[in-house]
Amino acid sequence: MVTGAPVALRAELDPAHGGRWTSLSGGDREWLWHRPGTERDTVSPGDAFVDAGGLEECLPTVRGLPDHGDVWSHPWQRNPDGATITRPEFTLTRSVSEHSGAVVADYTLAADPGYRFVWAAHALLDLSPAARLDAPAGTTTRLYPEAAPLPAEPWPVDRPWLDGPWPSPAGLRLDRLGPDDGTALGAILTGCPTVHVHDGADRLTLHLDCDGQPRSTALWRNLRGWPQPGPYRSIGVEPMLGAVFDLAEAGPGDAAVVPASGQVTWRLTITAHRRGGTTP
Image (cartoon, rainbow, N blue to C red; front, side, top):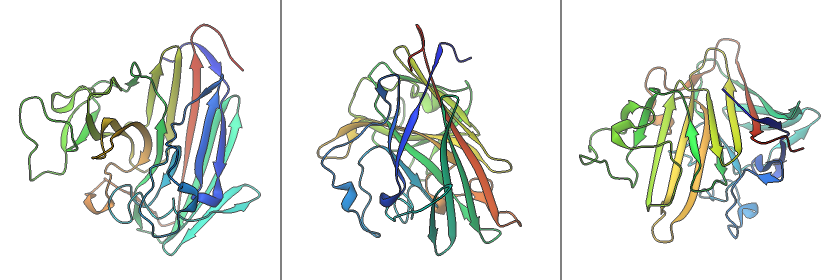
């Protein structure tokens, strides 16, 4: 249950540079983390992914090829209702608005029936070491073998992920988002369309609506464990369609699939609350 007074959120977007979200703010707080000095604005299509923070639109995959998808490095075209990007296999339209303090992003993907894809709102959040991620206990969570060691056994070499119940799949406690311990890991909370991020008196809620498609939330918990050399801290909480990072690894039910209508529509709603009173 969400407690506290609502805090009105505002989003700023950059269609010219991959449709990137450059700000998500409210109550004198900026929620998006940024990594300065990356020259993100000079990226050209085909370049390697630049981890500059903010929120990147990842489609049709997150990992794999192309890395972080085929959207983040291309300019979008503004239109009266938002922005559109057209690639050889799909057209994606996004409209972001504010309703009663919530930021609402509506998406439409048009492609041939049967087209399979993964989409993620790759949001890197600016959070304190005391922050935590709240999701339904027992949610099946896919844990990926990054840099974090398992408590009792080595990573298996023949499996792309391990399944376990939230918040401690394979014995690793994932809901705590700090302090920095030199590890990095990726996980996907499958079938989980709503999560809450708690940080001090503030709470950020991310909710994904989409009929007939698999909805999940990805977690990238990098506590100065990646990259080597020069690790830094970055926390990704990423609503997604699908249940894998890499579309090439998707089994039955692991990817979104365009139906006979040729379109998939979905909505991302982001709200904030603060204990101790409202802040405009």
